Length: 542
View 1: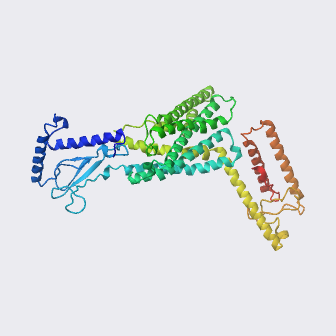
View 2 (view 1 turned 90 degrees about the vertical axis):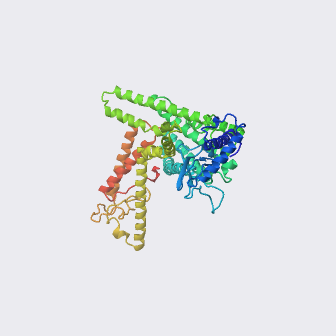
């Protein structure tokens, strides 16, 4: 403890006052104010203390009242453990815990206080370990770390999926990608900051020269980056709410450039973060800036609060619009209202509205509520990335379709590789003419788009059917004509659909993928009927 600031000075004053009150309590005074003039009563005080000490020494069955430097201990029976509430001024670097804790002092069987070390040692020992908040802080930090780790593990594959398919390059998914990246970067940096800065500080209780006590530059840079990324989270939440609200409230409004969202999401948070960093570096440059300054924190809290309030308004208005549209239809039923409300409530983690639950911190007097608040805040904060990834990526129907298509193509390519290997082995054995086309249904392929009637082989390993008889003559012209007839019909179907539907935009280009997939599936069905129709590998569909 030092006199470096007013807070430390107040703790020193509180400690001195507690010591004086302890002396008066031993002498029978109720409060220090009972002695009007301490200078006139100093001799009386000395005599009373001397007589009290002699009287206590004669009572060998009890441990005498004492002041250990922090706490006043009353007279205690032998073989008992005295308990006293931990004084608030012993918490040098942290606030006192919300839940009251008790220090322990042992009165031995012979009526003396337990002493540290060997027999005859002059130092009485008081156990202040239960007063330490280290265990609680460690547990909270670990919960926070585990929650962020879950978010990182779910966000990484989600971002990879979004960037792997050009069909997902639409405004909505681009907003999701930027928000996912913002949450991912914030989660990773929070994990690094807690592991290398906070946990060592907690473990050493500030006794060693840690990064925080040294006010290291790397520590301050890391903390201000965490605060910036935190603001980008709220900025992209606002962008998500603004875009969806505009999409529903003004369906035919022309969409502006996506650059506006980049400015809101990545550039605007730089300004409050820069103001905060400048003020702290000039007037409050100590302990790596981890101790909050109440008035200064509003520089960062105001944009976050603005984002939450506006997104809440957006969500309420979206629900109102959906309910009005349902009422305008004749088939509106209560179940439809419930579905509409459930659909909009899914947007709560995307808009960041789950933080409204922990926006109010309970008073320190409520011990249980305070502990619940800390753990609830840690889980809601750390698991946001997990929630948005599950709902808006892994639960997305378009993503399901594209992943299934990729898996189906992977199986087809593996089938083709197996067939090529089988064909190469048969060629080496000189058995291609005897075994070709007689082993079953397969992914019969042709190498190139020419020479359809002469180059063919069977994928017996992919879909065996030894009882299938060959339907194709040596020349194979019947199967080739069937294949060409099917391809012509498929192309006609694609052209008809394209003539009916409008041309897809640059962003919503899933129509071509569906048409190509329809073409592929129809060809596969035809192959099941005729094992000797060759399947064209549409490797350029990507």
